[in-house]
View 1: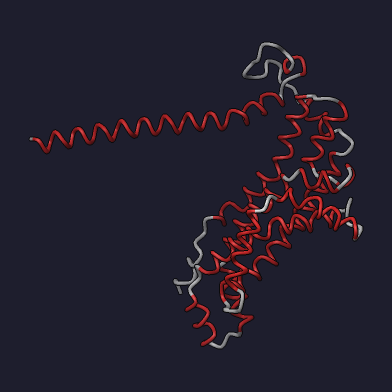
View 2: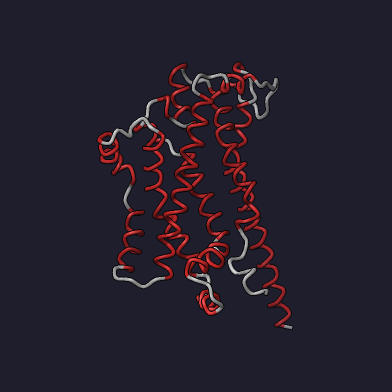
Length: 285
């Protein structure tokens, strides 16, 4: 009987704990999603509702004027193209260089290997803003300020430590026996790379590209420091746009929504590949 009572008490406590955990999770989710909702709410409000002293939680007279205003600004389309070009160059270069570096660290033994790993970790501890002025002077010395290539190179340096460290973990998770079996079957090192390691590291490349895309697309301080308004991305465009004409909250929120669309679209395109198992296809045949 005592055991039965203990079981009832334990089950009761477990249910109470579950209720509290679920309630806390719901409240936390509401707090986190409310700013996103308010941005959407403000983007569809006319200016009179936005500046009203009495806030409303939904637009009483929904309008698309804020989006038209944001899209009609002078530097919007050039800034979007600039952002896409810079992000594509930085992410592609980071994946190529980072993958080769991670492969060397994970698969080959050489002098200074552990030191390189520690340096990769130590670089991430240095605030990147502390290097901004030296980087600006270096790029200015080679005439790469106010250029898309110069910013892409800086973003490459910014993304490389994380890319190398993450891809090293993915490559280390691929059994070495697969490499050895392929070489026994007559594959060269290059063929092992193309036929074994690269396909199995695909999910890691996808996951790393998501992080790199978000970092490069959303970056503001570096590009705003290095480039003029004609060579900036949409994040810098938001500040420049509002500075030129004052703080128009409706168009600002509409512009923020527009700038987030490429990240969402990119994520939706590759979401199926993010959680794919590393060696799911290696042990089936």
